[in-house]
Image 1 (cartoon, one colour):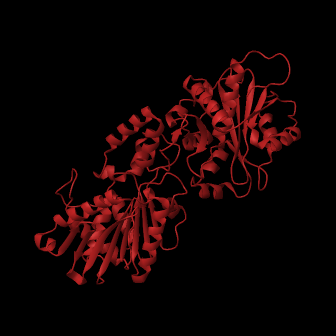
Image 2: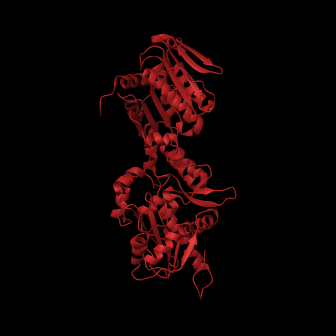
Image 3: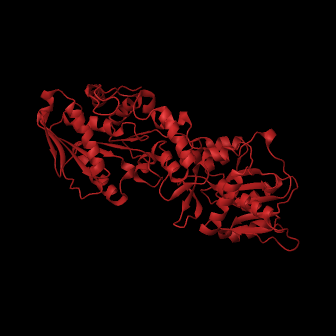
Length: 510
């Protein structure tokens, strides 16, 4: 490990002198956890202008930042005179929480040191000292009409992901522009944002030069109650800070049982995942999908009619095809990317590291074409895997009508009936519900698939006021195309199995 900077070393010496003001450790000296030391070292390293920390709820984010604010205010960390500390929070209530931690630490100081502070609790929340060159710490709310001014030497942006977009971004820009006047530093601390478009997400995904990023987010596709991944998002649990491991597992299982927004909220706040919890719901929980996976020996045979579901992607997205034998419940799925960029580069861009390469090694993901996947070739290759069996129907998105018609002809599949479906509120809600019921009734069985497991982990449904659902991605870089293809194939297979027997003409279900 690199040697800590002068400021980082000073902070690491100062913080353990403080007394924990509340909680089960109240009255004891602060004992920094490993992840807290790591953040202090990184955020206060030479050349760093902004330190960004993303971690699960309850892991002492606010108290750590309040302790650093106090050390800065007292001149223990940064000795320059007339220090100015800005503590920016989502709203006044959150600001009061941060201010309370600051006061709590002050109250734990020796009486002679407490005497140096002037505390203002009125319309302004401020703490001032004249010692060591003097300093002022003030708290402002991102949702108010904050008058910034001044030249902060330290700015703490607390729970940044929860700030209102327009006002929050404006306040952030004002704070950061002021820091440059005195070589100030920003600490941007929050639980994960619900999506990639959030400004806090952009800090982690596209950090500007001079930014230290520390993110405690588990890998995708794991069960909400998976203990190892819970401890990734909540590193304090192993060191007696915040929620215990037992509590986290119990809450995860309770959220799984409730499903919907309760599960989404748990994943966002406690697993530190980018999942929205307002008008969204999970399509299937991780455990529900995993119940579909069986060993190769237990996989049902390819008996009876097979339906092919196709979801086409563009140059940046995946194309996917699912094959579903409704009589036995057997499901197979394959995805495809264009050859450029390569799978390694795509994995880095999508935040999944080498997962695409692993999928390719497992035979679940292929590359073909240059900038786009050639639809006709992809469909023909999928049908080839059927060893002479012809699909009874192909199901696709009606909004890609022209591409499908041409591709069917080029692939020699023009005689196979094609079913047009949409992913809007009407078709989408019906198809999602049919998939759910098929899964719950044990009518979907597949071999363990990293492709499907990852896609279902990121698949959500948007819910309208009438309770209708339509498929959506939980993150902007989520690849849920295998889920879309599966929804189409399974829903159509179920419809065909339960529909009256057709004796003449083309299939017209859908």
